[in-house]
Amino acid sequence: MKILSIGNSFSADAHAYLHSLAEQRSINLETVNLAIGGCSLKTHWNNIKENNPNYLLSINGGPWAENLVTIDEIIKSEQYDIVTLQQVSHFSGQYETYQPYLNDLISYVRKHQPSAELYFHCTWAYEIDSSHGHFPLYDCNQQKMYEAICKASRHACLSTGLAPILSGDVIQALRERLPAFDYANGGESLCCDGFHMSHTYGRYAVALTWLATLTKKPVSPLPFMELDLDKITKICDIVNELVLVK
Image (cartoon, rainbow, N blue to C red; front, side):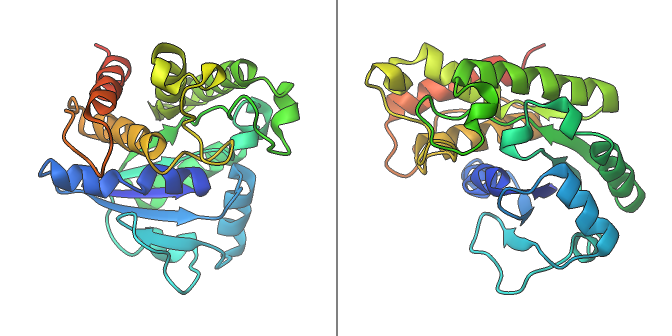
């Protein structure tokens, strides 16, 4: 399975452990991430139109390539089974920022990768005390941001036929249901800086969400890095519950 993501730093979070977790489960999966930090759907589309070589390239969650690339050269370089798109995090809860750029991107991807499945990465809300400059768009309220992202991303998927990757739902469920990640009451934050995923359980949970979604199979709690087995077992349970809904 070959996966191409046209994204930003939040797709980098998703890809960081995805290949490793797949390999651990004997799943042959290659990930290609094209990213610009803070890149919106509008900017992606403008870069395609202008063929701008502005993208960092990472294979299998590895280090960024030295040379910047264009979307065009990567999407035409090989056949992909899956292509993912996403909005920049601070506009993810504002559907008016999605179009017409999302439709334009979908048309472009389908032209060059006609057999690929297309997914939309539904991202997470910021941490409750995030200092991100755009958090005031949601009154600096995590729940308000989460609900806005759900509404906008669900509408995007329903109106375009894209399949959702529910990273935001999983992260919010972990915050609300597991005391270990209840940051407001002394639990561990799933963010490392108030908006990107932590390099431990945050990235792990998002990667498992992608893996379960793309393989359509439940994920099991195999030991990973030095993460607590009880915590990753509970993460797996929530991922399987939210992703593999029949």
